[in-house]
Length: 426
Image (cartoon, rainbow, N blue to C red; front, side):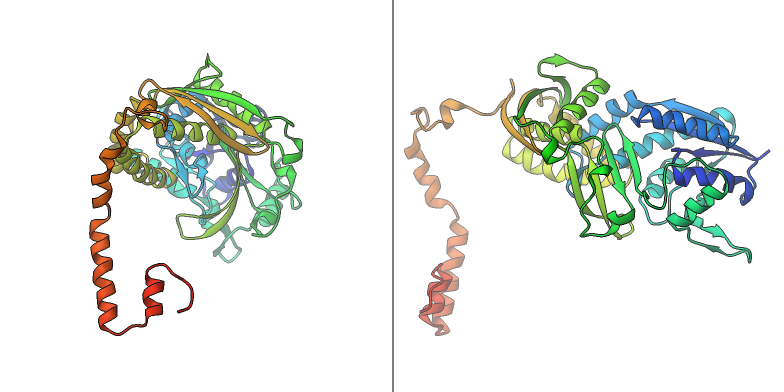
């Protein structure tokens, strides 16, 4: 009996894979594994029902708490961002693949299937973990490999062809030709793509959004909240300590009700394809905004400059799914050292899609009101004179050399004036 573990979301792609595994790849024992990282409970239930109706051996693995503690909180500490949105789908994929490997080892399977296409990022993220942890395993990707034609050739699947195939095989799938959105969801964010959203000038319809209210549906007055942090990790909302899962759940609701977290971007995928993505990530946007504000209060100027570089590199590695990369470990060594001082509270105002930091405090604050205040005499301002005189010394020396060179060349007075900042005609 040939066994294969299918990384199963319950959506169109992975549901179509089940009959394909039997009909075209010869696997008579399909094991479906759905990893719960915060999808709607109804989606988890329907995935299990759909898999069982299709005759698979199905397992649902609850990994929500692990996802928040070890993946989302890591993203907060690194201000995890890719091209303007908090990374969410990418940080869930390594955990999903890890749980699939654990189940495969438990059941004695040495083959994996997934529903990733050949154009997307998830094929890299999932297969990186599978190949790292089980390098000898066979990996089958029907959506990437294409549909089998009568002459033995394969050609790429289109979304519409998948829907037709699903209908022909009696598969109960949520997509239709009129509502063709491809949605990925975990507790850290929702991504929505496909259909008319692929048109770069098409305004997203309100129906695609579930976590965030539109501008006209938000409360008429702002909502003010405070977020507490301990060693870089969020621990409380409005002074009430919460477990990580509950904290994110509550914040998704609070921020989402105020329209915070809608992001519409043109994203560069790993293969170089530029795609349009719509995201909803109210809790993630709120926490990363608050975390950055607290870091700005406790970090030195040089720390914050370097942390920005570290965060960008961390975000790139996490986006690519390279969870075990040595550079990621090195970056996290610096990140975690700095986080020992990222403790305190950040106050935020949420209003009709906007988020504003209105206060922050920390026992490790480097802000000294007595030194910085305009009303204080503690800092002797006359001592700045010597520093100011030497400021930009080499730049000023270069300017003098350039001006002398232009004069030797007989360049016009008008050019000299413009060089010195006068944009008027000579």
